[in-house]
Structure formats: structure tokens, C-alpha cells
Length: 240
Length: 220
Image (cartoon, rainbow over all chains, first blue to last red; front, side, top):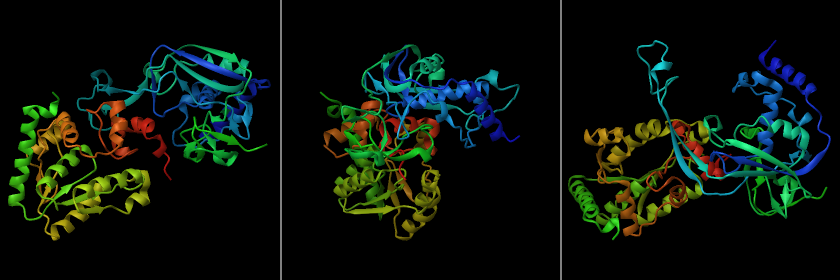
């Protein structure tokens, strides 16, 4: 069996065991952090976070064996706990307490114990390469999102979350707890005439500002990049 | 009192001026290598205050590494300081997009520099500073010229504070991107390099560019 087929089969099998979302409700999700949030982009996408968690839950340990070079087509949308509006996931970008960025520099240096008995190693390139990595962080205590989701399934998925943002594996953006509140109005895509996430301009009647942005997960995939209205700017959705 | 009023800074500016004056007496046809960054800006301002029509050479890294509005800003600044601005680039930037690697080394040093030599350019003013890195310190100390053109380093002994003090005290127009980066990473660390360039990935500059220059990330 080919590698790609193995993962797809595993995913489909896992998907069968996944509960089917039925009752989508507008909600606000607030994460309380115990360390600052490291970012590589001005905002986080909630559907991206949920996609990641669902992939991990379905593939289990095999998730970590996925190749970076292979393009997989997992039908993630089939049982996605977040609703869609014309293919747009009903999930906002992150809302932070502060927008002040601060710089942090992390160093990765060679340590003897990883040399495996080798007498000579290269630190300029290869496995033992030294790194000096800069990243920006935001000292925020909470990260909020708006979504339209199946709250029970969402709660179950979010229990697995350890951290948000970049570098969470080394302690940044550590999630202490989260709260899901049901709200009356759906603010996941547009709230009071303001875009809450990247929205492709083809879905809009009018917009204030647009940029080439990814609008669905995986957000690193360039094929998901399109001219989108910028979160936080005024927009008007096309009529149904 | 601010730093630009201190003797320490004034001495460094005087030292830079005397290096430039000595070089101009011995060079037939010098030029200033202007990237648009704060260091080459100081050098260009210093040189052009002595020789108004000095040649300025700028290497354009293409629209995938430098947003066009920033490129326009660089040219405006250069033209504001000298009437003789020459811009070189390579077609490889359009062909290879963000995969372009070491184009400057292969195209500028191997193709443009021989042309400059044939046009009689014999000396270049560079904005290298010892403080920047140990390799630059060694390069300046040993006068390791990477092309057959003689290199002059007027601000070799300047610190980042000298650079900003010179810019502020002379009210020189600098690239607007510095304000954006300076606020987030500090003016001591703010550097102007190609954006989203895999060449600088090991320094994590893409992480910072992704936050501050997110509009430019998905340029097609």
C-alpha cells in the first residue's frame, strides 16, 4: 500500500468513529494563557486550530509521520465541527488583549550528548546546525475567537489543546483553560459590518481593503491564497 | 543632551569624513553602494555632502523580496542625495521568485562588477560596520575586498547609536519600514534586508516579516 493511501484510509476509518456535528450554534471561545503568545502572522485562524486538533485526534500517533513533501487530500470538511457559509468556515481570527509586539531571540546550540559518539560534527549546517531564531510575541492573557460550531464536539476537541500560536512546544502561548460561551448573534464571519476573518472578495458585495491571504485551512497552503478582505475592515456580504 | 551632541559621536563623524576625503583624493571614479538601509544611507549622505554628484549604485532584489512601494522609496531617497543613481537587477528574480538564492553573488559580483570596472569605477564606499558581526569585523580589519574594486568603510567604527544619531541630527529621510520594525524589535536590532528570503531563514527573520509585513507575504 502506498504511503498516501495508508494515511487516507486511516483518516477515513477514524472519521467513521468521529461524531457527526448536527447542532451548530454561535459561540465565543476564550482561551486563558499562562505564557505570552508567539506569532508568525498578526492573527490566528480558529478553523486552522480546530482542523489541526481534529487531524491529530483522527490520525493519532500517525499524525506525526505525515510527510511535509506529500500533498494529502483529507476530506476534513465532512465532519468538521464548525459550520460553513458558502464554503467559508464560520470561525473568526484571534482577538488579543494587546497588539504590541515584542521581540524574543531563541538559541539552539549543539550539545555533546546529542553527538552519538562522533568526534567531529558540523555546526554550520546539517543536523547539529546552530540556530538563532527571532520571533515576535504578544503579552496577552486571553485569546478570543467567535465561531458557529457544534459545542459538544468542539469542547471535546479543545480539551487536547496545549498551546496556541507558534513555538507552543517550547512553552509559548500555553493554554491554562478555555471557556465556550453560547451567544445570540453569529460574529464568526462578519460582525457589525466588519470582517472577522479573511473573506474572498468574490463573496462580497463591497469591501474596504483586500490582500492576498489564505482563507481556509491549511493556511500554509499557497493554493488556498486568494484576494481576501482584511480582518477588521468594513465589508458587505453578497446576498444569498 | 542627546547622543549626537557628545564628543564621542562627533569624533566618529569627523573620522568618517576624513576617511572619505582621503579616499576621494586617491580614487578616480568612486561610487556608493546603496542598499536603502540606514548604514548605506549615512555613507551616502556623508559622501554626497563632500562630492555632490557621486555615483550611487543600487541592486534591486526584485518584487518578490522588496515590495515595489519600498523600492520606489529607496530610489526617491537616493535621488534626493545624488543625481547619478544607477540601478541593476537580474531576470532570475522574476523567474525563480522566492526560490532565488545567492543571485547577488552570482549576478552582481560576476556580471555587473566587470562592467563597472570597464567603466572606470575604481573605488566603492560601503556602509559596513564592525559591530554588525564578527565576520564583518574580520573583513574590515583584513581589508578583504570581495571584488577587484577597492572598498572603503567610512563608518566601520560606528555603533547603531551613531547611525541613528547621525540620521536624526541631520534630519535625513530614511526608509519608513524602520519605524515599523524599530517599534517591535528595537532600533538597535532593526535591519533592512530582503523580506521572506530563505537565505535568512535560519535567523527566523521570516517569523518577524510574517507579522510586520504580512501584506507582502503572498505576493504573486
